[in-house]
Amino acid sequence: MGIDWSLLALSPPGWGGVLLRGLVTSLEIAGGGYALGLAIGVGGAFGKLYGGPVTRDLLECYTTAIRAIPELVLIVLIYYAGTDAVNRLAESLGHDAVNINGLVAGIFVIGIVQGAYSTEVLRGAIKAVPFGEIEAARAYGMPSGLLLRRITLPAMLPHAIPGLANLWLIATKDTALLAVVGFTELTMATRQAGGATKDYFLFFCAAGILYLMVTLVSNQIIRVVERRARRGMREV
Amino acid sequence: MSQETAPSPTADRASGHATGAMREAVVELVDVHKSFGQLEVLKGISMTSHVGDVTAIIGASGSGKSTLLRCINMLEIPSSGTVRVHGEEIGLRRNGHGESEIADRRQIQRIRTRLGMVFQSFNLWQHMTLRDNVIEVPIHVLGRKRDEAIRDADALLERVGLFEKRDTFPAYLSGGQQQRAAIARALAINPDVMLFDEPTSALDPELVGEVLTVIRDLASEGRTMILVTHEMSFAREVANRVIFLHQGLVEEEGEPNAIFNHPKSERLQRFIGSIR
Image (cartoon, rainbow over all chains, first blue to last red; front, side):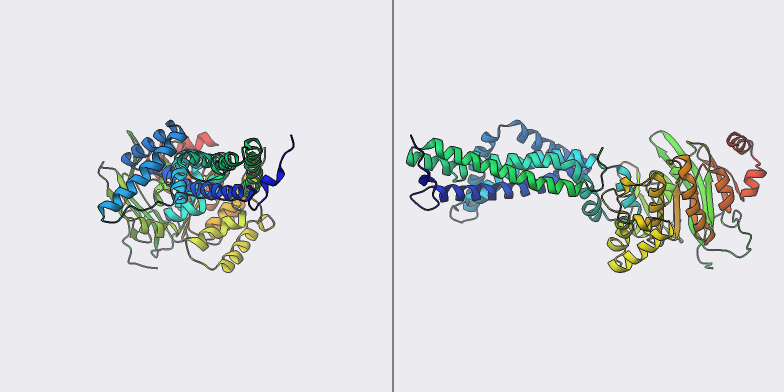
């Protein structure tokens, strides 16, 4: 039985275009969610390290709960609960129920999940920065915001990159879980193509290759970033 | 020669240079106490450093020398007592737990830019080249122009003999080189006082000399310096005042000649004897 490559053509009746659009959506969600997760992670890590007891307890609840619950459950939960909450809020303010943009909801969901893991990765990395370097910055009158931006974040980066690189790769694959809430990212698009043509094997192989390409390209970028971040460190 | 700053009780008595005229007090500590939990490390220390003074703080380990130095720029916050820099008192207050804390962040940040600290373990920023270490504070804290800051940084690195290493990261340098770079970083803010916290204690013996040479050079140009050190012969050579700490108190202070050749207290006699 031969393979009908024309099914992968970019324009209909080929499904290649649908798959690529799914890939782009997946990458948008992964990128947005990862960025949101990093922002939450930086805040969370500093809150855990330097915050008051209440802040610390709240963050501990957040990271524990998110990391304890399976991501599939979380995604379904946050996606439906989140959109429901927004709609209720809109109603109580006298607006009609709003149609939540799936992309924004997806980014939000992935971001919340990633934020919990980022918090822990960054907390460990910040603790690995020699305290003397932070003390030196203080001794020269650096305000805390500047100290964070100029000293702590760049100094902790080499310690954080392996963990953050893992999180990025996980983010790209977590987007596939959004298929369960009916969101058309790469996995959903693949299923639709397979369903329409009954050629599941071809399309899932194609999707697998696309995910692999994402990882390979990511690895190259991570390598460059890591080399730059580790410039000041001697290789042992 | 400002007469405006109120002299502390020790100001005129302990001045090393017998100039007769009052010189301006740069750093004044009045009855400074510092406790870590139950342990009282400083038990009421008063000292004054005038413009041009090179003050060496000596004493056995655990006597509170480093803690005293770190109280000047509030890396350690005194449990009680007063610290003045150029006559300006650093505001402290008590928090809800009765602990001492900085009253005004901005005041201490401003005062810290007048104090050039050099640490025992260098504490250079490892993710920056030597030049970037030196220009960091001038550009980002003092708001200097980048090209000016670079010009000054290169001159300072030249002075400490590291111009050729300006694009190197600290991890690739010896301890002596790192400490010289750290001195250049401190000089870059053009401080009123240089604070040295055991600057040679983390160095291999053969690297001590190159760092002492740089510090000696600074002393000879009349810079005000406060130096915590174990290098007694160096203290004797560069300092015009020596303070001997014992268990958190000033046991004896005076000119190097008096301290090292004619120690009055028995403890100082024993300390001088033990290090010979």
